[in-house]
Length: 240
Image (cartoon, rainbow, N blue to C red; front, side, top):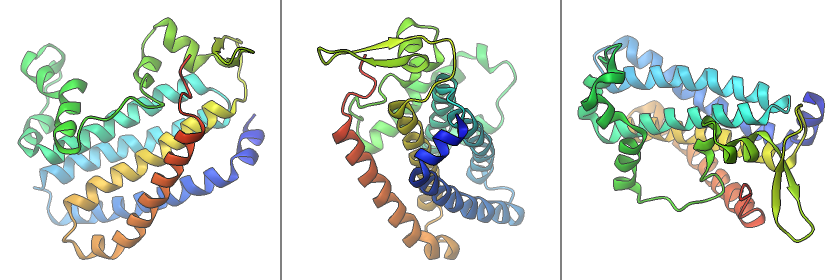
């Protein structure tokens, strides 16, 4: 399965490596910056989330290569949550202290839950960027839930019916499927660029960031074109 996936998606893997390389450049810059100023709360939070994202990206790649799509989608959802947290902390930096000093029992802290719920983080981003339309991956959160929809869409194999509709068949094994493979790699590539974007915007006056901004802008343009092309070709990718 790994050989089939890597051969079929050589172009996408090259794209992933390119984005990942940019992320590592920015991450190394962040590490050096934090060594000089460990009082920068946003930088501390960014490093925490970047470490998490870096590990999760590698995990998704392994799952993706082996045809374990359901688990890969669940992990991409976690990656997007990390990106969302980084973006929200940048936009609402008064939350940083509370985020960094989170108590172990925060799951029963009603105020903490209210401020850091996924809905609250989305609202922070929506205020800045506008509410996103429901797209190909609108149901992605269901990959983390034990719902029948999530089990069919993300863990099952898409069935194309003769009448043009789709279904989800469970096969009790790994399998190769172009729709899911492309969806996962698209999310990975986009999420990496998004986490880079948070850092670039926050530290745009930094000389290192200024020098790398051309590369970042070029990759953003490329990812946007890829997403638009894929959305046009597969507008209802996971609409089962």
